[in-house]
Length: 370
Image (cartoon, rainbow, N blue to C red; front, side, top):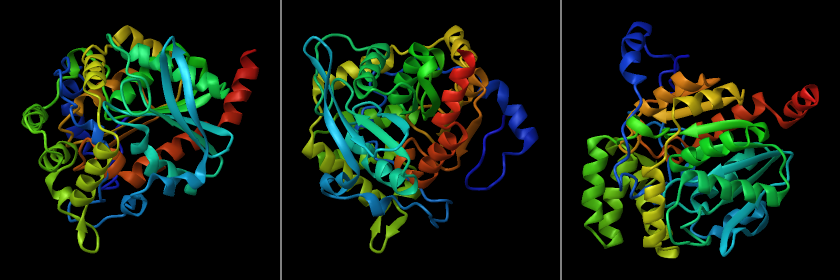
């Protein structure tokens, strides 16, 4: 399957694509210990082409007060997933199609809020759960080693608490790694799987040099006002940061403002962040388990940007080769921050994937099996 190109409307030239496959399909290399230092700011967006013309509407959803999102909220709470460890969640909407969204390294549930609101405005038959992984936000910060499989278990206990039998699953970056483990643990419960800018671990997970260099530079700075521009440069291409989002303000200024506001309102926990970094560093779903995931029959969508400084796009090509997704998207001139840079395209991809595999269809399949 060839990637769909959102900007050009056409797939990459066939011959060029074929000549690239041998190198693109090679799995990546283990993760640099702090390669996603600033995915905590994973507020993500991009316009439709390099000229700056944009159908990206994210700026309309960036509210200073989280209460602005709560018109859709139906519940919130904490779930005890093990002795002394609680996971905080929020629930939005009351529709039949259940969607669990799993955030990346250092990110809280709040990063999803613009996407959640946009999704529910477009499709009212959704119920969406967002939550804080262990180590961040309002969830517990237990000591000791974190693993993506443990964090997957946390998420499963949240959906158990909600009474969700089957659900759609979307994970970004580290959240995509956790989502792989969720799908492998409870494959019959997963209606669809959406993996964005992520990898399966092992030899393909080493980030591009630009990401390593930028992460090291930002790590030496304490002041948020100085750190934020470096963090944003790791998430988005320079041209996008300079593109005007609305009159008098650029996407870069919006992203920096949101990053500082989020980090001020909910400062990262250093111990929790380090534990999450180790979970990312040790994440590994090898070829055998990827074949198991493919054999499960879960409809999979994989999406990435071709200018990602934090997770090498080759990792998504490798996942494509191993998992044979029903849809594979490569957004041109797009960085790691697809939630923000490709706000509308990412949300539409989720809705399209759900529409292809609604819960009613899944229930019919289960009845046939039984």
